[in-house]
Image (tube, rainbow, N blue to C red; front, side, top):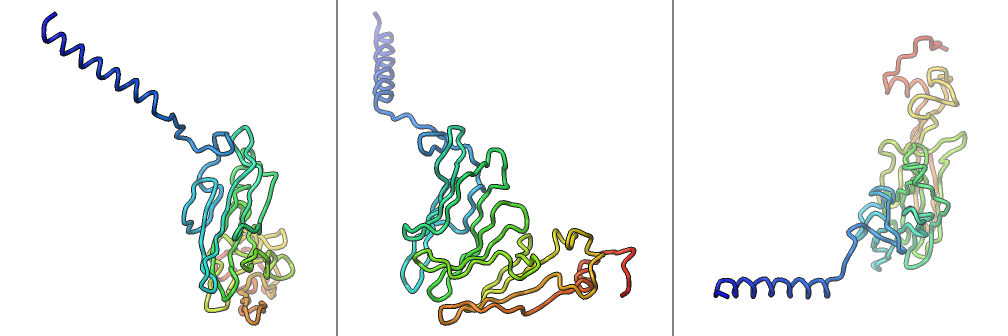
Length: 246
């Protein structure tokens, strides 16, 4: 056996030995996200929380400072089914639960079952945020809670007669200890009480701005601007062919 063949055999042997060592020590891993022993199939956006410190498609860890102390908020999908979709969603603050919902069916309902936590803001000793249940409009609730997860404010219907948060536009602003909410009774900027906005009475209050002022541990709500039907139609340049003048 010539010298060249001997060298080739040695090189091949070393490569094989290296592969054997690598195979025996390397821990196989699945590049797909897994939870509770199943491969997760839920996509990005199904659990949406603004400004996470860390997280992925199924959880978010978020830290807020209240009275110079850090508060840890944790949001997660859980109780995963064999098909890779979660049955439940939970949110906690410092380990104390402030939101829980089960019976999710994202695999069938899609974005209707998405859970969206946004607009976090600290006022004195409380945390304000909005929760939107799915991507359909008119499904947002305004919350404020203390650091133990107790709600001091929970507002879905901002005023009577189905005045709800207009969550398909910019609907919330903060200034000092005051929250301002834009709310509407008009569905999709088209229908009022199940009919075209063109059929609504001229003086009907169809939208408005509300303030929530936090002072001495309580919120005070006030309507600060109202929009009637005529103003609404004019602002949106809606053409109403048969609208009466009365």
